[in-house]
Image 1: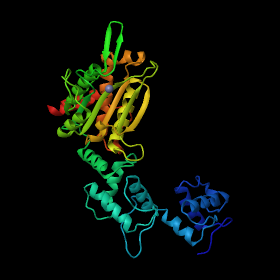
Image 2: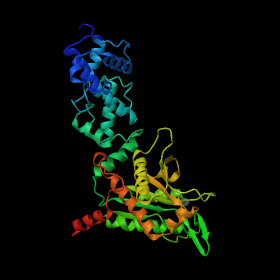
Image 3: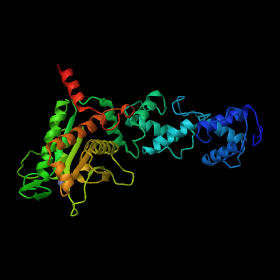
Image 4: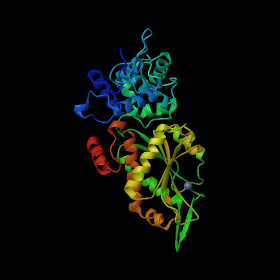
Length: 386
Ligand SMILES: [Zn+2]
């Protein structure tokens, strides 16, 4: 083919422009200039060449044309597989490679070519997801990728298995096992604050919150276990709490604590999930923590102290998605006034229930934060039980 450059007009230019628009490199086109290779088109071609590692001259020669042609494919447009003689090339292959790389699979450099390494990575992903590991990216594999959503990144196979087990469980809470872990207890009161005649302890407040959450989860058809009673003779170690959760076969683990600070102005809610902070993370733990964080912030107005990755024993040794919530500062007069109010603790329990429910929605059916009516949920479960 001849080289198409600035000043050219015609159907080939219109085709090039259409592809550049679909790649968001060029704004929507004025119909009068659709087939006009103008300055904007040249700029877009340069940007495209740069992004594809081609020599940047702003002209469309055979090599740039092949790359533009391949860029037309969107993931899901066609089935992808490793063809030995003439490998499949396209933007869809590149999107697949980037997706797999994000999830920790070794596809090599995302070059848009479906080679043997890409096929091996696809087969490994399929095995982790319980699909037939044929190394071909067909509808089932695409569906599994889609269901995992963009949020599931930085994962490792064991975390993907967590995700897979959860998604296969469906959006229903009935029959799930949730472990609630009220912190401290017995001789260990946790944070203690005296307020005139009143004495507030973290251990008692989080136990009460755990009991409120237990009631709501049970009403939604969930099997619930607490890691300790209201007044244990000793506070179980974090290791013992994690081992108990594993033995009970928990699907979700929720640890409840309060925070403290010498500065009474410190306040707010924070959540923690397992992760090292440099890419290794429990993907579903992170999702659970983010959901709990957002639901509590939206439903209670506590300050958003965000979600953090930690390698704490409690989070590291539990074999299910696990979150620790620090529900406000007992040392903050503002937070304390809320925390000692039973109605406020009810709202926190409803927020956590909504977050757990959202864990079981496929990503593409997820709902906005604060929108789940937990009363309607309860009524639906009651109706189903009749
Ligand atoms: Zn604590």
